[in-house]
Amino acid sequence: MTLRLAILASGRGSNLQAILDAIAVGTLDAQVVGVFSDQPAAQALHRVPAPLRWSRRVKDFANREAFDTALADAIATVAPDWIVCAGYMRILGAAFVERFPARILNIHPSLLPKYKGLHTHQRALEAGDGEHGASVHLVNAELDGGAVLAQARVPVLPGDDAESLAARVLKVEHPLYVEVLRMLAAGRLGEQDGQPLLDGHPAYTPLRLEFAHS
Ligand code: GRF
Image (cartoon, rainbow, N blue to C red):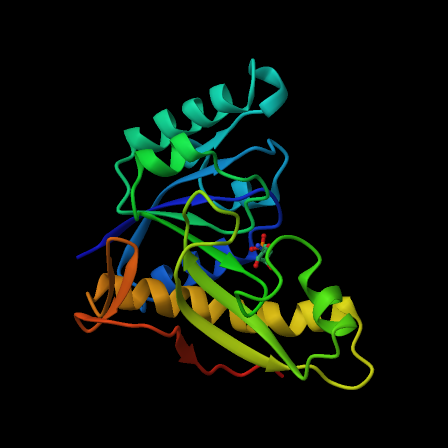
């Protein structure tokens, strides 16, 4: 089944590009049916043809809920199988999340449940962690709180700063997101009532995937 993907992005869009590249070379059976942004200048928007772009400024709406409703309405018109947050820097409100139950994914640059929220690389360094990584999780109304489907790990190396660590994590984010989408397309990964399923059975711990990071 060709997955219809609606991508939400606020910035650079390198995760989006990894998804587009995998589709282009035929390793991911999916179609990006729209890129949606709260930042009209986001680089991510320019990675797809103009008819697939949607962007609005939150400040042009009466409140955050009104923005979320406009975003949700626009997404609904492209009938996605999955809404894929890829560097989308706003919290999705409860009404938005409830409108697309168990159909929203996010990639977060930490080994959740560690370091929800911002500055994950700096926080991993300050904690003296020996490893760090990225998680792909289902989105619920709690920030970075939905069930984790899969994770990829990288070592924290002597001399790392937040920038070098972020770059190492980003290297595994791209294949991690693509692999999760591939497994969803193939029906190997799924969910039931917020519980991840692997090959049809409940998966109580995140799938650990290994990727090159240097
Ligand atoms: C990634 O590190 C992602 O995990 C985080 O924001 C960054 C987005 O990067 N949520 P990009 O826009 O996909 O290049």
